[in-house]
Image (cartoon, rainbow, N blue to C red; front, side):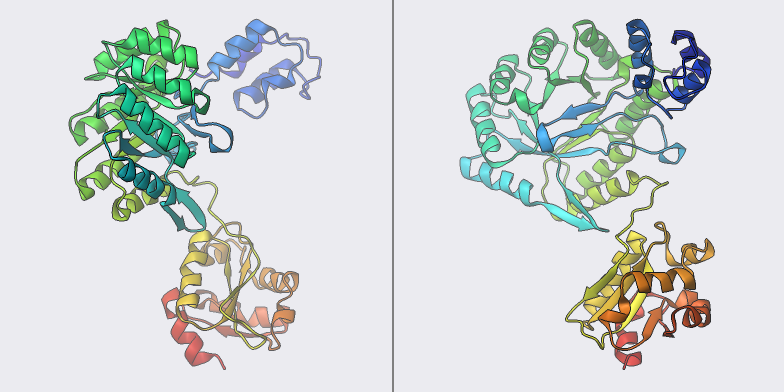
Length: 445
């Protein structure tokens, strides 16, 4: 369990020196318990206290890092069961499997397709996270050869999927510095795999037939000195997977059971396109940290990354776009000017309609703190004064020769006051974005 302010206070020097910026050690302890300050702010804390507080402050689900340099990615580190309780910190990682039995041409083509697969959604660039090299050939030589080709064509973090310790050890000689995930240690190879993971300082996945066996395996791995673990309970059905993953999460968060306090990995193979997408989406929701799939079909990947983006968006921090004057098409001084808020979903609903209508236009985006049009209006974040100030700030009068601006139909009530505040003629646009192309063609002159 997380330590209370009083528990933390007992470990502090109790000198009330004020060096940390707090009036007393108790006040500092309370701030530390609420995660409003750092233990580093106390210059006199003992090493024993640092160790105790560091262990107590570790997230219930340990954060595990893969990759190196700019390619580092992280999973785990979660502190709640449900996003609305606080937020989720590290999105589930999506890996694509590459089997070492592929021909050289097919292998290189698959890796390049993994590199090229990406999407733009509500202003965010989304790509695949990892490549899982699978030792389906059962040949150490073939596995290492495949690794060489993957390293030559991709910088993505890796999963080395083989249960043969010798094969893993040979592979790690080439890529340990890239912090791959080793998959997997089982009851039969745990000691060798643990030794290899410790030597090369990489994360180790544990694989067992059920939660009870996985629990025992995790205890043994910890006793062997492996601190970075990933868990696979090998569920046979979707129902069993949801049950296992939820039990792992609840045990870690609600019972502070550190043995299972690690991210979960799930392999989805040979299920068919729609079944793969269905299972992956379910695993992302409950509570996989890494998902490995074998499909690169866009109709599979898109729903997976879409639900992941939705779940791992902080509900307390709306996704926004930069407030400024945007132009679409070959605009000139006679082009219409529309206005909206900087809520990302609003912007990416309106802008395609402007582009699709092939009517060159400007779009003035105001700072509404990430609220949609009606919400911002109700919260007084999209007012005539704010819009008029944005018009001045972004020099709309220098972009066009006319003095007409189009506001969303849902806030037509703003028109009179906006005319007074800006001196411009206000036109009321359609309520729905889908009506923009027709509106511009018929109403603008």
